[in-house]
Every structure is written in structure tokens, then in C-alpha cells.
Image 1: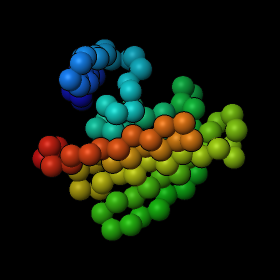
Image 2: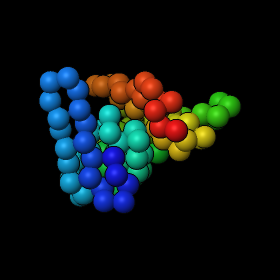
Image 3: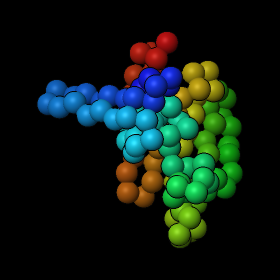
Length: 103
């Protein structure tokens, strides 16, 4: 994820996915630039923040689904690196596995 240009690239052994600014950013990429996660209550987001909890160097934000507030998701952040470490919804769970690569 290039924070200046908004371009991103996600690779695995079989394929390469990439994107341009203003387009959908997969949660696996958005962990590195949390402003792209759909959890901030903006008009195009599907989740609205409800509360945060802090545990040492990590804090977790709980968000409610805009269309069904009983359904919640959570995003955990590492305050040292200012990245999201997990994004969990009832439908998916994405984790940042190798934080040492960020430094």
C-alpha cells in the first residue's frame, strides 16, 4: 500500500491483485492503511463505531452494522505502528501475521 498515491498490490504464490485510488481496498491490504477499512461511519461505510477498548499497546474498536446494528465487527490496532492487526466480521476474519515486516 502506497499511502501517497493510494495504489496497492497484494501478492501470493499464484496471483497478483492491484488497485487504484478511490477503488475498493481489500481488508488484507487495508490493515496497513486503516483509513480504508469500512468502519468509520462515513457515508460509504457499512459499519459505524460504537466503542473502543485499550489493552496495553493495542486497542480494539467495535463497530455496528449500519443496516443491522445487532451485528458487530471489531478492528484491533497496534498503537506503536499505527496499523490494524485484525479485522473481524461475522463473515470474515483477516489478521496481520508478520508485523516485523512493517518496521
